[in-house]
Image 1 (cartoon, rainbow, N blue to C red):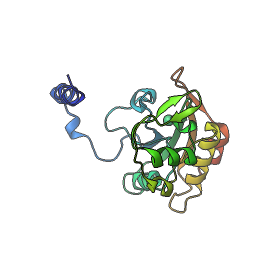
Image 2 (cartoon, rainbow, N blue to C red):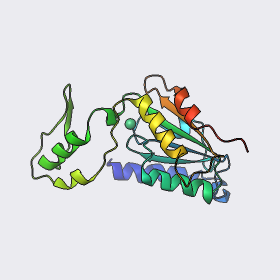
Image 3 (cartoon, rainbow, N blue to C red):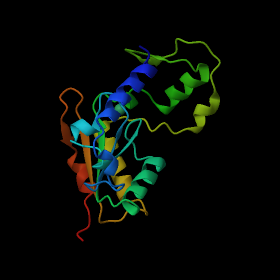
Length: 194
Ligand SMILES: [Zn+2]
């Protein structure tokens, strides 16, 4: 079965036992949001105990506090009432294995999928590539505890983010499934007492 067929079959089953989830309210019932990496090993619904309707989950490569992630977080509180945000990066993140310079070089030479070897990513496919990659900040990660602190700090200091929102910083350990709090990040994200 193709992935396309698998997805449609899985959805058929899901919809068959959808129950009363059609009645769920639009704002997240538990008033919180998670910003995390798109890594396929991370399932925020499972690692944080979410059901449909509970929370916002914003995902991108690295779980970085990009302008677009902040756009979603601002909508999350301003229009939909979230009050606590979790920034969750993780061990063994792919974003640690390249730099802007490497990504730009790879894409300049080929649009095929690169291979990850012991010395990092290298191109095995055909060209041509594109120089467009030079215009993108890939938001790579050199140290994943540092990146959590940086992202919580950026969100905390953003002019559209009110001081009453608590922001917590974590690393998810892909080897154990555990969330490890980065105290420096959570401290940076402390909410002002209401
Ligand atoms: Zn990742």
